[in-house]
Image 1 (cartoon, rainbow, N blue to C red):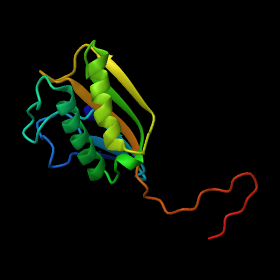
Image 2: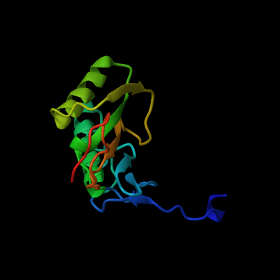
Image 3: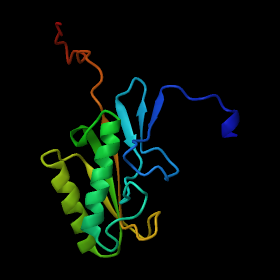
Length: 155
């Protein structure tokens, strides 16, 4: 049983106050000592927890990206710190996949991190068409990188 287990240390669950509080999960998690950030799937929810842009893949994707940015920023990271994304679109139409991808791609600009784009049958909220999850690294360490192939590092 989960309630009988000791509390895990070294994990910070992030719940930005600007995002819907009605969801039953944290928006992101940061590991000890605080470099890795794992986001929940960002959903097209407004601050009250309502799905926005019903029927509009691009409109929902814009809200999803805004919510992803909020979760990352609350975790000490940004889009430029993302290692990988997964973009889920509830559709059987490749044009919908393309519409979602164009919004995500534009938001990331030159930071072309690896991503997976997937068409799925259904997502968690009624009328939800898009969800994006991300893994990022926040740069909280100031230690020099280890030497590579015999080179030395000086401080």
